[in-house]
Amino acid sequence: MKVSVILTSYNKPDFIDRVLKSMMEQTYPNWELLIMDDGSEPDTINQIKPFLDDKRIQLYPHLVHPVNRLVTVRYATLINEALTHITGELVCYLTDDTVYRKDRLQKMVDVFQSNPHIDIVYSSQRVVHVDQHLIETMTFIREADHLLEHASFQVDHCSVMHRSRLLPLIHEKFGQYWDDDPKHWHHADSVFWMRLNHFATFFPLKDELDTTYKTPQSFHHMFSSMPYDLIDGTVIQREGAYYQIAHKYLHEIDKRWVDEKKRRAVRVPLLCTMKYESKSMLKVPNYTVVTADHGKTFYYIEDQQKRRFASKRDVQYFQFHPKEIYAISNELLQVLDEGKLIQASSAFSPPNRRLFKWKKIVYLLVHDTFCRIDPELVKLFAFDHQPIKLYPSQFPLFQEGKPIVPLYMESLDEFNMSLYQTSGRKHSS
Ligand code: UDP
Ligand code: MG
Image (cartoon, rainbow, N blue to C red):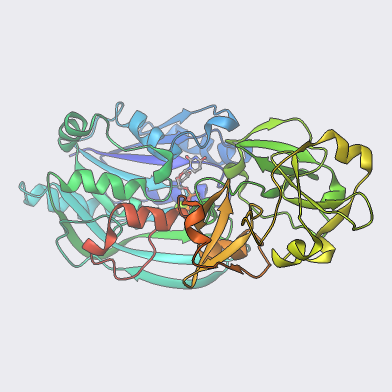
């Protein structure tokens, strides 16, 4: 039986060599390897080249425009393409930070050869966390010991082999093989396992047949702890310049607005910012408190309009610290259109991008909707003011918006993970 191995690769120059060696050392010889490279830099490609002398190995290079990187789950898109090229009766998947044990293919093929009724096999996996010097910091074993009817979030990308004959069934039922919708970046493998499970169960092999490495730069880890949309008003740093997210666009802002003491740039994986197109520079960033008359009147900039605070007390009430207030010129202030007054009492008219608390839950006011925000994200996005307590009459004044939670939580909710026994481990591809 021929095994088609699909390897997705993107800029892992320190790892790719050992991944490919682990294929060369396989005791089972009847395989083909499709290297789906996603536009890696030359240092990675140069590591791959020597292996192309082996006739069983094919490199499929790709050119990806940066703005397209997050349009789909890249590895799923690459796998879908590879699945149209494969010639094996069996298929398995490999990432560029995982190595197969040398008997990995042999052991799995043995199961298929002696059990015609088995369609999917998975094995135990060694998960090794390494630091930036590739030194091991933590290891655990993801055990394979059950027949799985729900393999999602239990089994990793690289621990599975299945018969190719399932593929047309999946395509027929779901209209594609792997679901490459970007909301599945973190777990497109799990979505595919769900599809596989529709037709067959996963048969366990107790042996630890692969080792996967998790590095601090791991894009998935950073990405999955972010919300799918970056919070409006977030400031990021890129190549020495600062930018603010405003309505799905990235606007450059002057360095003076990002003073360590006053406003922090948030560390965001570069790929998360790529879906935002760049637009012109903002004269004054949004969500900034300004005064042009030495603190007699204060304005809050929202959507490039100025909203006057009814009084200085309102500035304090909404938890703005004196050090967050910027002095600007009158000319600059005049350029901005006048927005709605900000006040706490009489008509409650709060500023956006502030934290509020209602019944012990913290909300962020975003475009006049209260969005529940996960405590991890409060920290990650550097909100350091106290949430403002809401009165019973205030909360119903605004609609509730989509909760702001890390992507991985959103996914767990979506799949109603309580249905499955997840053993409490956070899965990653
Ligand atoms: N990958 C890709 N294109 C990208 C980013 C990642 O093809 O733009 C591939 C990568 O080569 C790997 C898989 O997607 O095979 C998972 O990515 P990674 O291992 O970086 O994520 P991790 O699980 O380590 O967080
Ligand atoms: Mg990985």
